[in-house]
Image: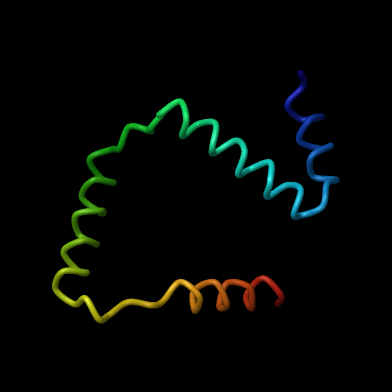
Length: 76
């Protein structure tokens, strides 16, 4: 299998088809329980974000708002 030609063919698919493919790939990885090794830097960032959430639990943006903002940015 040639990665570049396979990727080129996949990029010709519709967005919903590509999303379904990505979900299937991620589901397969999850089933294998293949979790990436976190670097110390990533662990520290997670700890920082959790501490910020604990300190200010009301200072969050709901998912639907994040999603709507992202869609707006993609349309520009």
